[in-house]
Image (tube, rainbow over all chains, first blue to last red):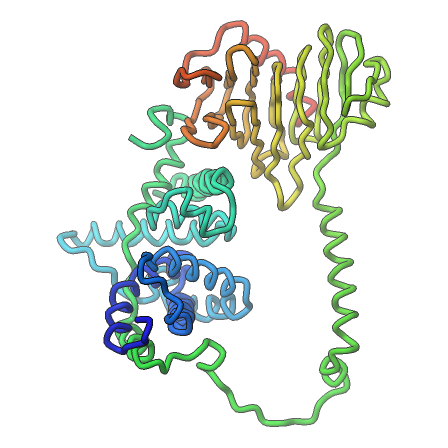
Length: 177
Length: 285
């Protein structure tokens, strides 16, 4: 990867794409923006490939870049415009893509999809700092220490944001799920 | 078991929300996009976002105001000054209410940042009790502090604390209060929802999003947080081992090796909190 060998880069991409895209999608709430974010993350990764430390797992670094790119994106007018335009012709949560859930009945599929839609909508309504904390903790399964490092805050602040995010999500989702 | 332990009866919605986020499935990317990006990444042909959608611009006649905007030397300072003025105005409007001394019972001399102030001088007391000052209430006296319709605090005899900023109106609504010893009773008001108060003692921390409760900070034993109604999250000062304590219960965080415990609140504690809640209810509505 450090030598930017196409095959190694391809394997690297396959290994981390889903984590990067998944995080971007959950933070931004729409497909077009998540694609933009993923492209930016892999561009930055490509530019910094020669500085990768082979002894360290690059995943935390990639997730930090993803979070920062998403922050830049949702602060930009481009993200708001893209959300407006995608909401006209796409399901805002799945982005028009069917999510596979093998073994589920059509009713079960429908319920799961509705539950996901409501949850994602509630996440998207959170302020960005709370959204980051709850997604990194519950969706990515990171510890508070890792979240604190990624967001440049202390551990107590990470816990506080996570706790506030859950309280707000609980309020938004009350009676819905 | 969740990190919050078994004490979650007051927050089932939060637990449901947590489970809902945890069980979100991984989203599927568009396979065409995925393959295209892989090819670009592997080959080094990957482009920055701005380079992806280039649009040809046809020159047209430029109106005068566009010409003005195109002269950065003129509009950048003007825009910066306007932005600074707006930021200043928003910052001022965002400020939370000031602390007010609504009543003083007993007599004696309080110390505010080390300066003695007689408790009979109510105006002087109100003027000096501002966010960030160290307040020491003498034995034999207690003070009721109120911040608008947000929060009421009863500071009992012999308590030492750092007076917190009151929660702001729109953003920056988290506030921290530090108590070194003594007993404080809190009740939140109409304008508190959306804010968070963190009470820190030498060994414990309590996070509050709206409720009535007491913090007892005893240097000999530790900290006890008694909850009258609602839920308070109580844990170690590091923020670890946070547990949701529901109304009618208390959690004790010892300052020695003993692990924290949760018990029912004592009858006298409930009575004191009930009186405080009833007394402050009309003030905070």
